Image: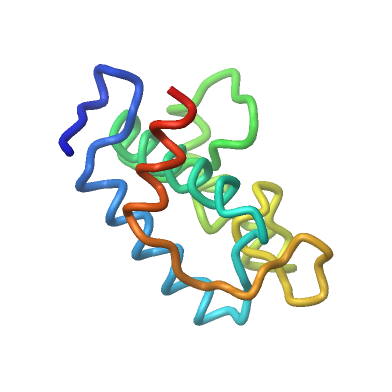
Length: 121
């Protein structure tokens, strides 16, 4: 399955890169993906789309007046400063084990992401 940013979806290359980053970061920080895998899939898709469009994985769960300026400031580039400093992920991608929405997974397959992508589409 090949997609392009032109159809409002991320490229497969950046989608896989952001999936790999998310899995590695969760394992390194002792955090877990949301118990609802569609949340994880949508956030990873958003990160990959921003990487395609902006060159950086800007947090997809916030509104920005100027996305390019935000990328340069780097505060909201994933992992954002609140995540790095306090393990506080607004997107619910990286959740501490005591979070009510934390699942027990630190991995998600591309197939799961594609399934969510198709169901939204």
